[in-house]
Image (cartoon, rainbow, N blue to C red):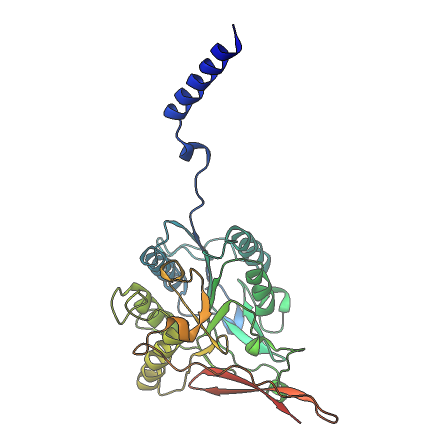
Amino acid sequence: MNRSTFVLIRACFVLAVGALFPPSVFAQERQPRFRGVVVGISNYEGALALKAKLDEGAAKAKTALELYARRAGYSDIEVILMVDRDPVNKKPRPNVSPSDIYRLLHDKSIQAHDPRDTLVFYFTGHGARLAGKMQLYASGAREGDDSDYVALERIVEKVQMSGASTKMLFIDACQVLIDPTAMAEPKATYGSLQTDTLRPQGIAIFYASSRGDPALIDFNVGYGYFTKHLIGVLNRDDEKGLSPTGLRYASQLHEYLLKAVSPDVADREKRKQSPYASLEGALVFDLMPLLSPKGGGIVPAQMTVPSDKRSPSPPPPRTIPSRPGCTEITDVTVEKGVETWSKKCV
């Protein structure tokens, strides 16, 4: 067989293989991923025992997040539900431990590693602020026993592992102060941030209540007021829901939750509950990253938010020239539940 005949046979073989197996068989393009961990804890002991069963709210939050993910353009969606009571047959399930939560969130953070991905963590259950730091209570938690506490700082660390440009935490838990000295905390600086003012890049944290306040349960539905209104806005596909034509940005979502939850609690419970959000100071989180012209979750506000849709965002920190005798500190103020950060010289 001469060389020209061999080359011709090889070319015909390559063409035949190409016809049978198109390039997509060998190199499928990675689809953007939506990953979520939804935790609902109902099994507590002693004084922490709950009359409400929060697993049902968590199950509905999972379904609502999946609906929101499809609306946002995702096809590769996985939201894991972790509960200690089956929301369908109402029977107990194995306890959910802190290590269970950390391990699963670690795995999902690694899976959501592309800027086009979205990572969500949701928790409903008991919580408290111990010595100024936010702790969530896993199954079987008892007052005074920190072995079943889930540190929000650890949760944030796990979420920060993700390369996703849109990362969100929803915390439906009390922020009551167990340590009375917590109110006397010094203001945070860039070098030492407390959890409630922690501003890791790319993470929007939505709290059901402000520091020192409870997160109340609506016993008409069996789960928190915050969860009730969050589920409602996730389920709506219109200008009043989390949709491309509605509440597309994190600041808008927070403003909605604040206006929905606070009056509802005041009317039904005659108490105060003000949802709180920790968002990037000069940036707006686009909660529809695949539909964004920039293709990412965090983009400059002036580049993405239509003027008729823009909700107030905190200004960027001011840079103050250093001078002898000047100590720069970061001043944090909160208006309508949204942080504003600025530097000042003292």
